[in-house]
Length: 480
Image (cartoon, rainbow, N blue to C red; front, side):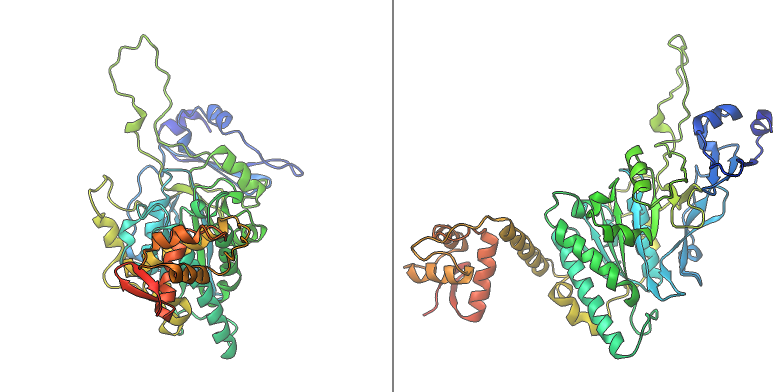
């Protein structure tokens, strides 16, 4: 093979093999230099992880331009897969969303640095699940900014860490209830839509929930692990979409690590540290190598200071590589691919009409009525912003309580249950009190310091049970 053959616009393919007993390795920079290529994005290298490699050289980057998906791409095939994009050679890149052969829900992980295209992939997967009758529970932990179009297009959408905790608790409860129900019926496998729909719990920006120092890290990790154990066989899958470069940033759990290694893993543009950790965590076999994905397709050009050409060579004008990546769990983990173009090319001032069109008409699938009680109050009020915010407030108050140091109980008899402390404060008061006024006195009784959210929740419960009286808007007094 010669460089002129490549320059002439031909596609050139080389099969390389090292002697038996050796493992193939390659240096992309040296390979590009040897082939006389100035643009490394024109080359694709796939290895079998052992002795053989397939090197393909294209006249230009074959993944530079991607079309939007078709409806046929979005529909699940007989193997439970959908087409998410194309490999460098034009063949369809498929990702499993359900294992129809075993009746198992999918556990999935999407990794990538900022700007690598995770949010658009999330939108596509949400839309795919709606089109295929899945129930999607989606936590957008970027405050709802990652996928605002998902509102009303999925069964349940939350935008806070507290909401994600409520969603995970509900999912685990539904999984356990289905398990009991199926066991009583003598069923040992999940049958899609017979009668229950498949459920996917998708946590976007999952690193915010699971990284070190995150307020709900321990509980969230436990719930994700539990869902991974019980959910798969009862039709409830879990997907984490994250910027994390190490599984330590996703709960640091060996169980979680093993669970995700068996699932669908997508790697978008990465950092060097992320690659090292993926190999160390076993998500990529030690012998496999992946080509780096540049931020843009701008060629690297040396320009002399004496070159007076006014041509604008700003790399920001070059096409980006969003959505380019590797399907590590596919039969071709080292083959570079790119996801479909999702949404409008230029930013839109509001909801993107192209993304809304992907979701299609009609309402999304909902949780089976049989499991509504198991999903609890959070699911029941998921579309009531005020009621759901109150539940999120209660989750935050629980966490505040756990974080507070315990004060010694004073000789004056302070401390004990928060409800008892509140009743004592109101019994001594001459006038009705607000929650803030009750809080100030409760925190002087020698017991554990509490936050106003805990006091408000306790007051509501005491008023509902008749142990204290509501005497006005936000005012409470001792029951007479």
